[in-house]
Length: 223
Ligand SMILES: CC(C)(COP(=O)(O)OP(=O)(O)OC[C@H]1O[C@@H](n2cnc3c(N)ncnc32)[C@H](O)[C@@H]1OP(=O)(O)O)[C@@H](O)C(=O)NCCC(=O)NCCS
Image (cartoon, rainbow, N blue to C red; front, side, top):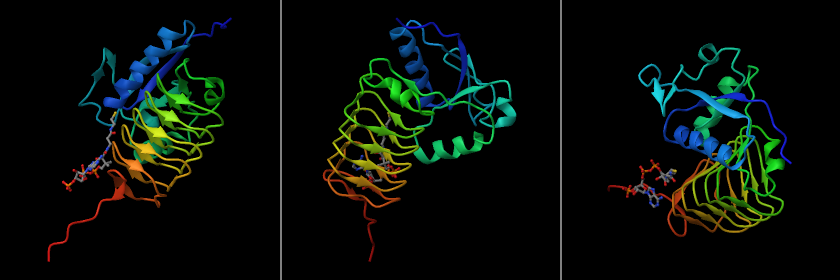
């Protein structure tokens, strides 16, 4: 039987499109699990004070320790872009905040992923045997991650990404919606994969690839 946990106040850092989706994700967890402790009390966003409310909740300030304060303990960083996500986490990391992992209860092995910090796994994702996710990895709705794949810190997989077995995504990789990474491929740190692409070869670091098969976009030269 599920044990009842005391309510915990959570603040979402990022009041853009992904911030809305993370709010929806937290509601989905509450609908599926009667005793989820998380209750969202507001957002923080660098667009404050221009933006000051979202989905019926207040935007309380910028994403800075000065605005968030010391009394608010639980934060989640709802930013899809892997590099911006890293920058925001580092901005907050010298302070005593906690970044819970928010895993939809339908995910097999959710207990293991919940031990990490700042991981999101949305509804419909399937992670099979011996998948490793590091802190602050986002696995959006309906992704598939095959056996022994390793996804490193801050990487983000957008909806319906397929990662076949034994793939390795280094830190801060961003994979656009619906892309497929075939087995044993390695994607270097900070690289981006366009939506709908099929990655069949290793990708070096800091590279953007797109298309089927995925290739680096070449600049057009005017002679
Ligand atoms: C790959 C990506 C990151 C590149 O972004 P960018 O650097 O801003 O690139 P641009 O939009 O300036 O496009 C550059 C060129 O690549 C092409 N392109 C962009 N994305 C592409 C894709 N996924 N597949 C094929 N070609 C693509 C553009 O048509 C453009 O071509 P052109 O120079 O001939 O006009 C981005 O296009 C993408 O796919 N993002 C994923 C979005 C997503 O999944 N969001 C999830 C929301 S839930």
